Image 1 (tube, rainbow, N blue to C red):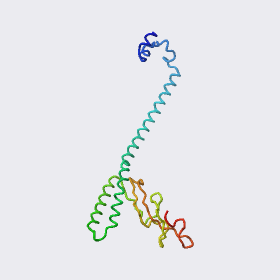
Image 2: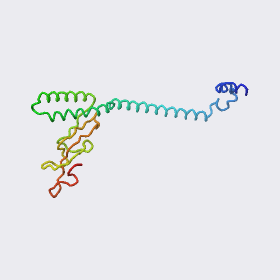
Image 3: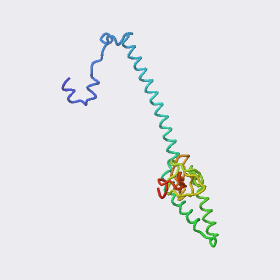
Image 4: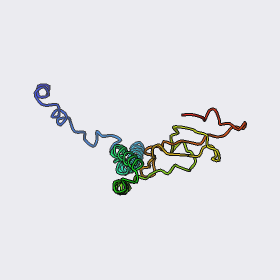
Length: 191
């Protein structure tokens, strides 16, 4: 037999192993309590693996949904500067260029409309209260008559993608007045 094992592939040596007869099987052939315990343990392991697989399937489905919802994030980040430039052009156009301004406004509105189809929303900021989770303060200036923390102006609009912050708005915030009537030294000037 040793000569055959040397010449044959490893799988054949296993195939030639002796077959155990029923009388040699011992407790494996009867209704032994150890066998019942092993079967019970195997059933528990099988149930555990089935539950783990179901959890994996659900987690994979959630990840696919998230990928579909936020898969355009990089594209939208790349497009946002174009929106910024269109907004700057609208801000610089004078009354002599009313036709140009009208065209730029229509392009801007159309562009925003298309981006809304992908879940993009503009984040309103001006006139609201400063929220560090949505806004990036670039300046704090004294503003009589305005409570501290009021957003006075937007330098750059913020955007949400399916309700999640894509880019914070860059804003100028009203400085909180101090008790002595001056502006808060920590809030004054650029941030």
